[in-house]
Each structure stands twice: as structure tokens, then as C-alpha cells.
Amino acid sequence: EILMKYISTRDNKKTYNFVDTFLNGLAHDGGLYIPKKIPRLSKFTLKRLSKLNYNDLAYEIIKIYTGNAFSKNELKKIIKNSYKEFDSDNVVKFSKVKKFNLIELYHGPTLAFKDIAMQVIGNMYETILSKSKNRINLVTATSGDTGAAAIDAVKNKKNLRIFVLHPKGKVSITQRKLMTTVNSKNVFNIAVKGTFDDCQTLVKSMFNDHHFRRSINMSGVNSINWARIVVQVVYYFYSHFRLSEKNKKSVFSVPTGNFGDVYAGYIATKMGLPISKLIIATNENDLLYKFLRNGIYRPSKVKFSISPSMDIQVASNFERLISSYYNNNSKKISALMKQLSSKGFYKIDKKILRKIKNIFYSKSINADNTKKTIKMVYKYNNKILDPHSSVGFRALEDYYLNHSKKSENLFCLETAHPAKFAETIYKILRRNPNIPSMISKNLKKKEFCNVLPNNLNKIKNYIRSNRLH
Ligand SMILES: *Cc1c(COP(=O)(O)O)cnc(C)c1O
Image 1 (cartoon, rainbow, N blue to C red):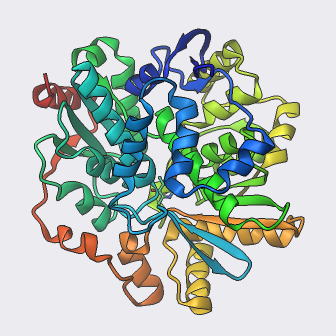
Image 2: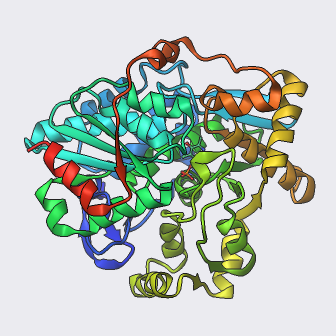
């Protein structure tokens, strides 16, 4: 067995192992870590994997990427502990509306799909740190769900602290409370007077300040962390294995912001899972929809929507996809990224765009259609979609009506529980979604949070004075 090696999207010469990529998060050259080569699984292997339960499948897929970072028992234990609190024996649940299969990814402790990867990451940190006697400080930006998932995953763990930056007033009440009501000595919430992109820029600046990064032994759990991608690959396999009809390929519609989740679907495709389309479902922040039309990646100002976890104009993981289509040519990627920061956009070759469109489809869904879809699905079978999942559902319907080859398995990822966006749901349906009992009592607790300006130095100082030494 050959151990997985990683490179940076901006330097394909230097190689790293899993633990390096895991603890660093972002490469020192500003690029993202990617595997040097993604293994393609044989038909025989796929058949064997198709019979496994969720945890065993997760073990088989994750171990390909973690190399010798964990022993067999360690990794099995990490997975088992990560999912033991989930409100489902096999992590996810399925439901069906019309022809569309919904993958409920929100049965974890903070009611969004991000728990699925974050719980594993929390346990990976604990395992790695207890062996190395390292102590680290995690710094992460959140549009609402990452922060809660990360905090739950690392609260009360030894040898690490977490600092979570969220845009003040721009996350839902439930999202905020899931973060701020956690009373743990290693958790620090920072409400930044700015947008999510501001928070993300602050975190990136801290990562790119090598002196600061070293001085606090900084690590990150944003969707740029390769481990998150890997753990998310699992449910694409699992869903296809459980629900695909004979020999049909699968289509997955993915509510998209930072391009982490749908990129995990792309990795599943590269590994040989028969996927015919990945749908990049976006809200009014439609830069990826536009990209698929003209090959130009041009972030603009964030538009605030009713699906706030996707109010993102910098789809960080997209660099990984572009790198893959340019065969990990890091000179090319560095040039494109330089152009992005100097001119505000980059354009890719027509030939490459055509290839990307073979597998990706995109649709941007506005607020009006997001609401209509929530109403329609509720009327149809009493199921309440959260606004993010509604964007995915509507995009899947659009694809099915206009482009489907008819003989495909149709999947929509449900990325959050509707209770997380109760205010929005109430305005649309005039009723409140049920709040799962496992969180309702926590939401009444005292909140812990510091408000800080959108100012790099002030935030650095705050982190410096509260860090774990
Ligand atoms: C984070 C999030 C998304 C977007 O996922 P990405 O991996 O950033 O594309 C979609 N829906 C919900 C509910 C989220 O929390």
C-alpha cells in the first residue's frame, strides 16, 4: 500500500503527509492541499464497499487519505465516537419527494451537514495531539454552521482552543445560540462587525502571517481543511450504494457556498463512483453559476439572502477544482490566483470549461423560488425544507425538467434542519418547525461572545491574549 502524498495547488514539487495538511490547514504558499493523485477504485472494490454500513464505509474511504496517521483501531474509534450522538444509526437518513431522493445530513448535534465532518476532525485533533504533545489554537470563520459544528466537536477537549469569527447579526438566532451557549473553557466566540467574507479574509490574513501563525501554533477547521472534504466524500458513496437503481448513474444537487461539499462529490466521481452530474445550487450569490456560463471567476459584493450559510462570494475550494482540471499545474494556478488578486477575476480556457461542464451543472435560485419550493414541498408531503436545501431542491427540479437523461438517480443534499432557520420558515409557512429535543434546552442557556471590529490587529491581539500556550 502506497501512502497518500499531498501537494499544494501552488507548488506541486514539495510533498506533505496527512498530518501536515491536517494541522496546517492552508499551505504556506497560500495554496490549498490536494492529494498528489486520487486513487480510482476498481469495480470489485466498489462492490465490496457497497455492502458496508455507514461507519465501516467511512473507515474504508477515510483510511485511503490518512495513510499511517492513525492505527486501524484509532481510526475506527474516531469514527465510532464521532457518530454515536447522531440521531440516526447510519449518520444520514433518506426521504423522498416526487422522484427526488433527499439525503438528510442534519442529524448531528448542531443540525447541519457540517457536523458529519467536524465531529471526525475534533476526534482526529484529540488523537494526533495526545500522541505529539502539541498544543494548538484553532481559528475559524463561519457563516453560521461551521462555527457551531466546530465548537461542538472540540468543546472540553484537551490541548486545543478554538476562536470562531462570525459576522455579527448575519447569522440566525439558533445558529448564534448553538455557538454562544457552549460553556467551555477552550471556546471563544468573536462577533465581527462585518460580513462572512470579511471574517474569512481576516482568518486568511492570520494564516498568511507566518510569524503570527507560528507564535500561536495556529490551525484551521474551515472548509479548506482537506480532512473535511475527505469525510464528506463518504455520504456520496453511501447514498448511491443504498438507493441507486441497477446501473443508473447518480445526480447530486448540492446547496453550495464555499464549494467544499460539492467538491467532495467531485472527489467521489474521481474515485470511480458513477456520478453523471453534480449540481452547484446557489442562491443570489451566483458567481459559480456565471462561471459555468463564461469561464470567468469574478467575486463581487455579497448579497444577503434567506440562505445565509451560502452568502459567500469567495468559493475557496474552487481553486482545488481548477487545479485538478489543469492537471495540478501549480505554475498555472499561481498565475490565475495572482490575476484574481490583482485584477479581481480570472478566466479559464474554453476547452477546460467544456470539460468542467461535462460533470457540473449550475442554477441560481432567488428568494422567491426558494420560498415557493418550501411551500410546495410542505404541501406535497408535510416535509419542511430549510432554505438552503430548498435551493438545492429547486435546482434539481430544474435540471430534471430541462436536462435529465431520465434514467438517473436523483439526489438532493439536505444540508440543514429547518429548525435552524425557524424565523424564515415561520414567515413562509406560518408555522414553526419542531426543534429536536437534543438542542432545545441548550438554546435557553447563557451566551458567551465578544464583539470586535473588522480589524485584523484588534482580533489578533484578542487571540494572542487568550491563546493556549
Ligand atoms: C456550509 C453550508 C452550505 C455550503 O456548503 P459549502 O461546502 O460551503 O459549499 C450549505 N448549506 C448549509 C446549511 C451550510 O451550513
